[in-house]
Amino acid sequence: MSRRAWLWLIGVPTGVLGLVMAGLAAPMWDAGGPDIVWFELAWSQERASEILLEWDGDARDAARLSLWLDFLYLAGYGAFWALAARAMRDRALDAGWERLGRAGRFAAVAAPLAAACDAGENVALLVVLEGRAVDVGPPVAAFFASVKFALIGFSVLFVLVVLARRHRRVAVALAVAVLALVVVTVVVEERRTESGARPHLVVDGERGRPPLVLIHGYSVDHHWWDPLIPHLEAEHRIVRVDLRGHGRSEKPRDGYSMEEQADFVAAGVRRAGVRDATIVGHSMGGAVAIAFAERHPGLAARVMIIGTGPDVGQEHELSYQTPAFLPVTGHLLRAFAPRTWIRHGYERGLDPRIDLSPAMASAPDRLTWRAWNAPGTTMSDYTKASPLDERAARIDKPFAAVFGTDDEEGERADRYRRIRGARVVELPGLGHSPQVERPDLVARLVMDFGQSP
Image (cartoon, rainbow, N blue to C red; front, side):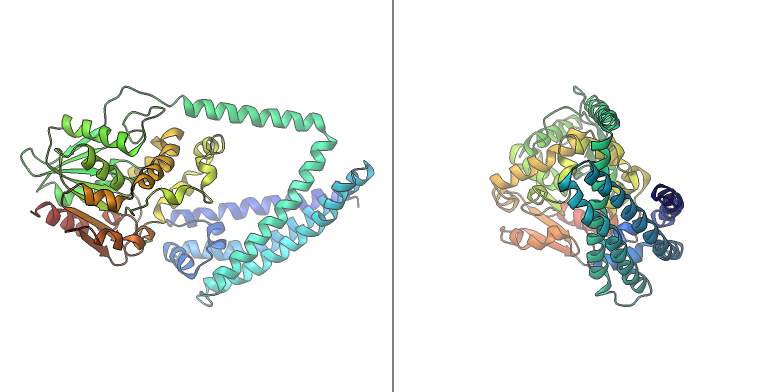
């Protein structure tokens, strides 16, 4: 049987099996957790345990079946890409491409090595699913998974490079198609920019009650305060402002610095007829809240931040998330990344038993790429110029900082304790968004702080 026949014989059933395994991700997402790839790359016992807690019985059964099927799948893709790499190696040598031929020798071996790593990863994860070796299983599985992706990626890339060199017209046509897709995506995303709209406000509670201004965090909107409102509206006049670029507020090309966002919020607060308010900001909204008090002291009586570290924003300077904040790659990810991936990214900062409401989960969909991209730089610029703990000490107003103990931002909470009279509250077992996880508890903290002298 010819090599081409073997490729068809192996490739078709392997592709079908891959589609079946992709379908098994649905129960995992339906349970509110990630799919099997996130489990493969959990790395730590803590993260693996969180995923297992998020998955219900059906999701775990689906994960277990996916791992068992993967033993068949890895045999298929290992053989397929090894054969394909050998075929392309021979073509490269026949064409006199010596360097590519030498790379092909490794590419042909890399595919079965990737399959072997995949098998080791599956064994480790199946053990973890049974509740054993939870401490060592996740890092072992993640190591094998990382090596697997690197090896199979090399084999696939080698095959594509040789095909492109042998079939230049096809390669050029595909490149033009990809370029056209990129251009259309960027143009469509950029056309979503707008200007001229006033800040979008949501006001709850009756006039005359103590005013409270709630400022949401990065890439979400006023709905992230929804769980808190029933606990506060009987006692307060509550103003929620969608930050510029977020929710139903304007989405211009610029104007996303913390200072400009603070002025934007102030315009909304004035329109609501509120002054001397308690200002509460979550995450990036905490930086905006401090900038608000700096620039509009007559509107702010006191400031509370939730989940906002003193150097917030600087962690975004270089990380695995960097492609999402670059031109073109950021546009493409915004346009084509599965909504379930984005939803899971937000839920990672919550107690695994908490599910976001549809309005909260869909908040990132209302962002433009510029509104998504700019805060990573502007937050960093703001805290580099002067950290938030130093800024909070200078505003000379009652100040409070609230953190969940499971929130990485809380690791620097002690710096706020140095501020004279500051309240620093750490909430055991809560993550980056305590107002979503325990709205009753956060509401009591807000009301107590609002009544402070």
